[in-house]
Length: 465
Ligand SMILES: Nc1ncnc2c1ncn2[C@@H]1O[C@H](COP(=O)(O)OP(=O)(O)OP(=O)(O)O)[C@@H](O)[C@H]1O
Image (cartoon, rainbow, N blue to C red; front, side, top):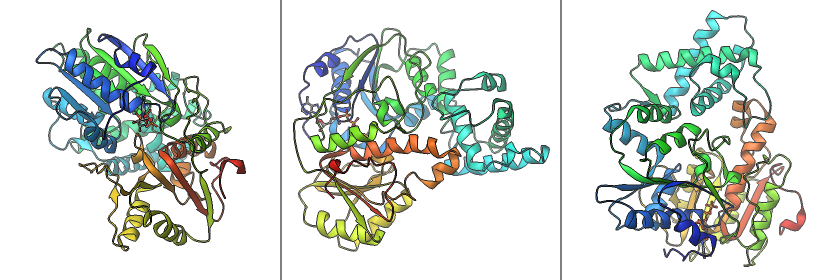
């Protein structure tokens, strides 16, 4: 796949100095990933000594595979990894990571459930502890990503990115007791880390590590999804005369909440903004913009207002069906089979639905590409891919199909339970929908069975119906 030549502000960003911290905020399709690759290649070729390397890091493992296909294969001193691979590699080099020492997400949930049971036995009449286990899982993720390590700190902290003070300050201690008990149970079974606190340990390890740094320059793509601890650890992973270049879009933030640059370890970064959308047609960009202008889309001062693209195409289709089966049959017969020369993706909310759709397409003797963290090769040829909204971050396709945009599926009922707050689930899930919509280069189909999700703008002018 050819990489386009940078234009205007993109060129400025490509040749930013080789020392310092730089932040590039851009709207969807404005060339952030493109520039992340170009800048990584530029720094690797011209600003590294023979034993130095450049790291291009992202959050999404599917995107790593995609980047490796797009990126310049021949550059020996450029690593393209996801954060967790970087973290594991570093801790291994420091002799702090043995075989199988990270608790899987499933094991973590089991430990938290057990921890909650144990704490309930100590405080049998406490109503905070009666809240669903998912709420505790969510809060423990948050504590770890924020890097909070004491009850005092937790009780003092102002919650950023939360819809309300839905956990009363006075009750925070019960969440902390469950957190402590979780850590005890995890440690007891020989697991030193989980995916949420790994970055905190990496950060701490760099603090005392005086050895020469392995990477001289780090480029972060999809930076909006990195936790403060992840960003801090990356900022410490370079020498003082190295560079960090961060690319991100707060409108697409789907894993965490915004933090100040200082909290993220970036010191007075110079900030640049990409507003030109090179990917979507006017009609698709208009829907993306309308999604981001809805009242429940979280306001953020870092949001970059897009300049409208010049290319025009069909309006997004919004189609109502009488069953989910019918939705898929329609797409297979009318979009996938007749359009063998296009790249097409079907995106859904849950991993389980991905497998169901893949089986359905296979029955027509078509083999779809599954977007997943296990994928090791990226097939950029025309054809159909299936994945979750999360797995599509950073990617693009000629045609995007978003089936099942039905009220009882979006926002996801699991997220509503975990967050214990419908408004907050809307805040989160509307960004996923934004990601899905903005993956489309020229054609977009959205459908539902029954009642349409409240996450979609209601203006009929935006759609062909
Ligand atoms: N200067 C340019 N000229 C022409 N096309 C460009 C230019 N810059 C980027 N593009 C194209 O625009 C599309 C979007 O670029 P890219 O994926 O880098 O955007 P992004 O900002 O990372 O998007 P997102 O955050 O939505 O994933 C790609 O097809 C890319 O090739």
